[in-house]
Image (cartoon, rainbow, N blue to C red; front, side, top):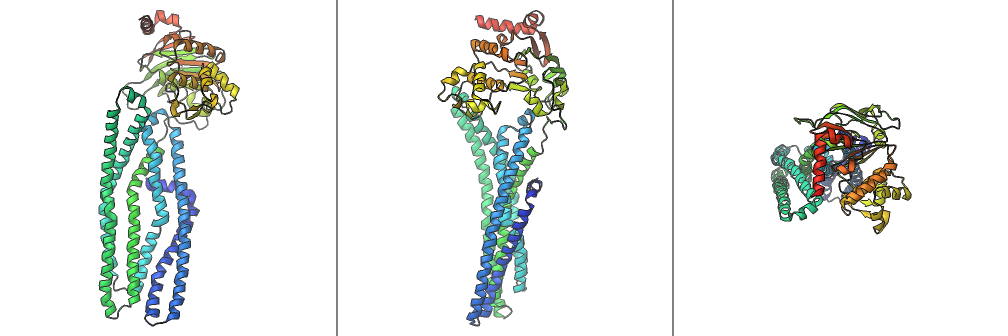
Length: 576
């Protein structure tokens, strides 16, 4: 998967990569030339006392060194830019794939692991790309060139190369074979730490309300300790790499000087050649050591690439049509034709045999016990899920054949779980209509019964809203979310239990204010409170995923036992 990921996202940067390779090649050739020039200075200048030769060759060495410095700096510059662009492109592709996911895929992965994969995992792969461009490209050139230049200086000591390189490679392979499994476990435990921390931050009110701080502290401590332990285990193996490499390098230096001294003494080798050979041996082993830096990063990057690829290769279950319908009549008739929905692997469907229609100018309410499938039913209309059986139509067209933007432009959704974005009241309202004027925003707030508390805020429409809307109450969040849907004046309103946090008086005023605004629109309300829906034009009663009642409030009281029981239970609760 790592190779596939690199091939896909580095392909647009072929020109930059070619420049990096050429520059690194020039820099490496310059580095390989310096020991040979130094050997000539010793053998032909120092030993013979030829000062002019020393100065002339010294000038060449300075020129070669200057070229090496310039091309290396330029190569690192292009390498860093390309690596950063690669990371940007991967994160962008990851984000757009996640945005295309339906609720099914989001539930499969979960927010904590998606955050880790788009940050930490991408960073691991990006670091490999950067290391490759700045270090690893030179390693094979240095190794092959170093062997050639070493043999050019003296063939008699070449057996040392054949002995030392396999020893170093075997040591590195042994260490890496123990590191790779640890990296896989490390990434999973990093997911766990992120998940626990995210839950505690999001649910801090619940934690404090139930005095569970000690328990949550222990839970985070356990996850943190698990991550620490596996990191220490991997770190021990990682720490063994460089001492092992340095040991081999130092032994190689001793071996070259030991055996080379005999060849110098016998006259088979010059002192300058011995110095150059020693330098080339060090360069060869340095190239192996530079490769070990990649080998340290590669196992973790490989695991990270697998995790990134898993998301990028996951196809959304809700697929936009190839040639989606982009024009629909302004009626917004919603029809369920024997629709059903079953989660993958579930033994029983959440919904089955759902057949009814919601007409413009009417309010259709959906009620039922917890787990009856009310939210799932509403989610089938905007295609947060796709019906596994039957058809859901808007204006007589299967929603799976409508262009997603066209479908969503007709809908104003207030979901069950209200979410406000960090920013201001105005920025959250403009999420529904980017070009909304202040007058339009105040009008929407007034209809949603939110104008009073917004006016009481320090900066009115410019008052800050925290992430998730945690700095306002539950009822205020619901009213702001309703205003956000109202401001776009859609043809189809979906209220998924959007009045549950409102008191009875506010609920009544809000429903009364909605009537003139929604008189030509189709309105579908999911509610638990009978008082919210008793004036609806038709009420759909769900039980165990199926429709057990359909009609007005008065009709259902006489014909639908489950609905009558819901009404009786709520009336009894009010009396008590």
